[in-house]
Image: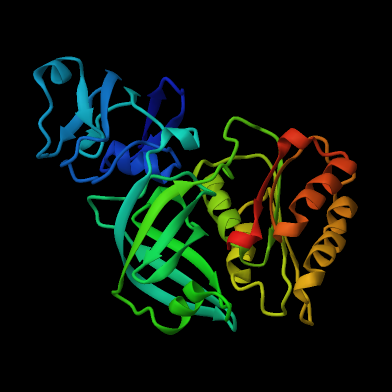
Length: 336
């Protein structure tokens, strides 16, 4: 039978199995707990037991002071429960809470999922996992090539394994490096995180996500984080693409719709190429289905990725249709 862990001062809570550590269960549940190594060496995940009993504390190299021990201090990556727990621990909640990190990663997978789209999978060292909030981006750095900022397309709940969605662009040196030169097991440095395109975890309003092309990447990160948090408000994902094969993770999106009663997925593709100068008009035109599906937009939170030129126009259009401007968060496709 699982126990319940409550984190103070946030009041967040999650279930934990008796064989899990507090850190493992917390990350699985979408908690933004502070940690680095997850192996008892760094001490970053130190917390304090306020109430409850531990079944065991696994060996760790980091030395807690006697004062910490007497106050109930433990490393969350080493502690397993014997009862319900109340724990004092630090959680990241704002971008400014997270320090900028630079980490050398290893390429574990490069997968072409559409004619012009590659999924890049990186693995951090166990001792240097990336702290970030869902929806944020990092700078990817390769020797001799101009750095590029790319959104993390995976969930912070498994921050050792980072996914990025890369579009083939013949005019972009970094894109060509990914598609033509980068190999599995290569090293790639990352620096970050950056950005405030993050989930409002205090809101209980239903959510409308609007993704354009590979702007699906940060939207995917947000959705996976919301799923980990077991959010029960409704969520409707609109994925608008400029190319016929643009829904490169269509089955994955449909699996969300199959698994969760409150999740709706609408794919809006094209059967012809859209010229760059027509991206804004095309995106705004196809956004109109949202108004057809939802007669009253005033009670929703919106998360939108769009062509750079369309960002302000898309936000203005949603406000015109009744959405509250303060409930709209946007991220520009120009960076992707």
